[in-house]
Image (cartoon, rainbow, N blue to C red; front, side, top):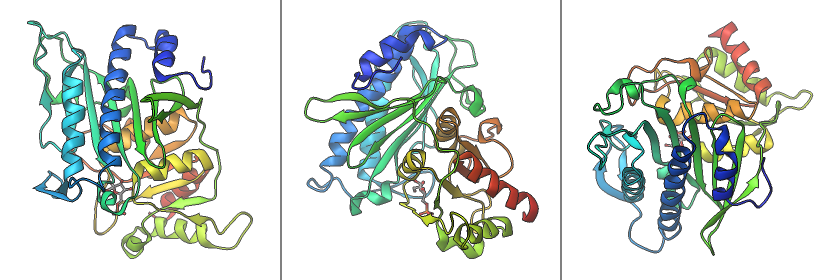
Length: 335
Ligand code: P6P
């Protein structure tokens, strides 16, 4: 039961019975993410003041310049998760391969793998636009005590036991689900405590906001072009409002509160779209569905896709159920 202004710690304890595995494990998992989120929040908030903004000089597997905060966020979450004796492996946007965590005990009985985008939207950092962390949690499928394998990471999104995001915006929020609805917690930075501010978040079934990078319009499939024109034409509650921050967490968080649709479709420039299935689309799809919304690649539910590679990309359409269904109808008819 969610009570307004409950702390995240109280909420986890009062709701851990819902978690079908050992209650203490969930608490330790979410608590480690909570701690890392506070550390990263502090770094993000001071980015403009200290020379940690701007490219770290490296590039990640995506071939994107690694911003210094990307590196800091990645290292913060990895070290925090390693020290909790519960995670046996981590997959991150910033690491080419997955990380195996041996654990301090002889027989590593750690049962969870975490996939994450430690700082999504990082290109926005040096222009002071909100960014986010996205995480996805699975139980390993290979036997505890043996080295974690790629099979433990390439699970369909339907298998997630928890997923969430942290949005470092005008306030810092942690939003997550363990399969029993979605709850949002806002950080009081003065005392470093997350308070339940958005209990039982629900995606409105309809909305009037569409989020897509229209600069790619000419490269989109015909069905996507037709849907965008549908959003723009005068009729009943249209034209819709176009809102695109260029930060996945921010765009979807806003749409979940106000109603709306986010699209990153395939195009002649990106045959599979841009977003990564394992640590962007799956966790955001789990949250979206738990909040009553819909998420697909235009044809198949994101959560039903069978992953084939750690960093694979998929087309992503996510948001208010009726808006996603309308976009899917155009794509079914026109491709
Ligand atoms: P584009 C950020 O790089 C990101 O992964 C998402 O956060 C965001 O929605 C999208 O890419 C923006 O991509 O091509 O429109 O700049």
